[in-house]
Structure formats: C-alpha cells, structure tokens
Length: 292
Image 1 (cartoon, rainbow, N blue to C red):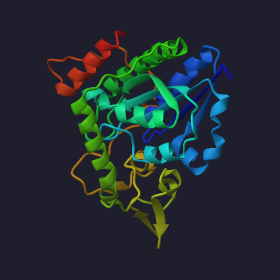
Image 2: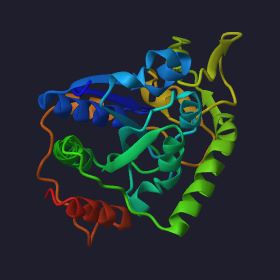
Image 3: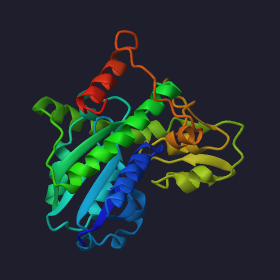
C-alpha cells in the first residue's frame, strides 16, 4: 500500500494526459507503483477504483473556464469515500492568468468526499482553442513541464504542503464563469458540423467521453451533452469537424504529435516586451517556479 499511487485524470486534447504520464514516470523512478484511471472510464465503471489500496491519489484536469471540465461533476458524484486519503491535484492550461482560476471549490468538493488535498500544482501547455502558439514555444513549455513534474513528484513524496493561492474575488469569478461554460456547452455543441471530407469512419463517436456524438441516417449528429473538450476536433483523421462559432478551433496539433516530431526546441526565448500579455504571464509563471 505504501508504494501505490493512483492518478485519475481527464484529458480532451492530450495535454493533461501527457502531464499525468510525466508524473507517473517520476513516481515510478522513485520506487512507486502507479495506476492510471481515466475519468470517463471511472464514470462507466466506478467499482474499478478501490481507494484502500493506495497511499496517495492524484486528480488531473484541463482548465475549462477557470475551473474543472463539466465531466468532473459526474466524477465527484460517483467517487467512493476517500477515508481522508492524502491527495494532490494538477491542472493544465494555455494561460496562467489567475493560476488558471480558483482551486478552492474543487478542494472543498474533494474534502466532502474524504480526500485531503495537500498539494496543488499547475502546468502551462499549449492553448487548444483561440490562439495557436508557435511550435517552438509549445516545445519549450513541454520541456519545462517535464522538469517541473520531477520537482512536484519529489515534493509530493516528501509530503510537502503546497496549495495554489487564490482570493475571494477569484473564487467567486471562477465558480460563475465555470458554471456558465457548463450550462452553455449544449449550445456550443449545437454549432458543430462536419464538412464533405467526412468519411463516417466513426472515430469521433468512439472517442467522445460523453457519448455525445452519433451516426444517424449516414450523418454525424452532435447531442447536447458536450463537455467542450475538443477531442473530436483534434482526432478527426480528415479534419472534418467545424463550428459556426467565430473562434479558432482548427489547425492545432496535439502535444503528442509535436513530441513525436523530435528535435524539441530548448532555445526559444520569450521576449516579454514583444510577444504580448499572455507570453508575459507565461514567462512570469516559469520564473516563479524557479526552474529556469
């Protein structure tokens, strides 16, 4: 029991899954046994998670509108009682504004279920909607995240307490904004459609974590249970899925695709006087973590 770690995560486009793997790799290098659970799999079969078998539980997610993805609410409902097990959380985001939003609500929800959060951490990765980062910046963020994962695992194993800071206004704003996204995701998915490149391969149907996509009368149909994870956009082999929304949702690469390309860039310089507010925040995030 003392050497077993469970990592529970949800990942839409691959960023959080990659960080889960990096954390798991470093735990295993420290002599721990790691078991991974995907949120959508636990929702389908909650009985597979037996809390008593683990020393520590980790929860990971991509930030959606300054909070957890909609599907996480389902996870919190079906989680077995944790019996005050020590817990850490990690989140990924494209912009470190306000630390990606408040962790306070999730910490309270987990506490109600018997999970005592003692360590919280965040990883800035590529944005997956709106802004397409340069490949060199994405690579630098990933390489930084790899080093940060080593640092975080060391602290977790040593039982160091570290909670992300927040204030009352950030807490309130995060809850309101996050709940608005959750309630509005049905409207968002109603704007999705496929173009003539679609071959009805069914991949989007298989990979949707909310079972929100179906083939009906030889057409792809999107339901109203979308969690807005963007997985269908990223993994469509024909790049067929589109939206009527006036925001950029196409033309992105998964972090796994960029890693496989090799020759990851270590020398990309973030010029805070040239690259805008988001990159200024990214630079401050990296400086604050004291790993550059």
